[in-house]
Image 1 (cartoon, rainbow, N blue to C red):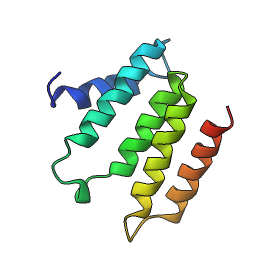
Image 2 (spheres, helix red, strand yellow):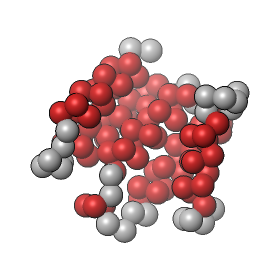
Image 3 (spheres, helix red, strand yellow):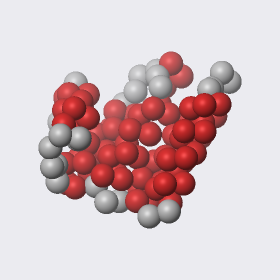
Image 4 (spheres, rainbow, N blue to C red):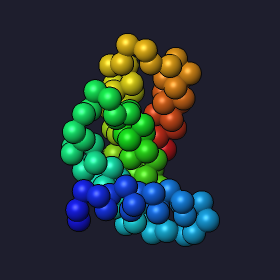
Length: 104
């Protein structure tokens, strides 16, 4: 896959995740595409990496991979905390999702 295809693939999964019965493999593919997008980010300091990790976590969760979801959500929290102006509300939401992923 080419880099420019990743946002389209993850966007498609995001659009249909609540209205279609997608297989766990599709969600897994979306999560992997998020990781590639993170790895290929040209300017991570101005990219919302925490949001990408959190999106990845949600996709892993839907793929029935709670350990991978928790790992990605932990990375989302770490990325969020690395910004000096992070939102405490966002942090609370990310931490709540992490607990959900760990409690399965």
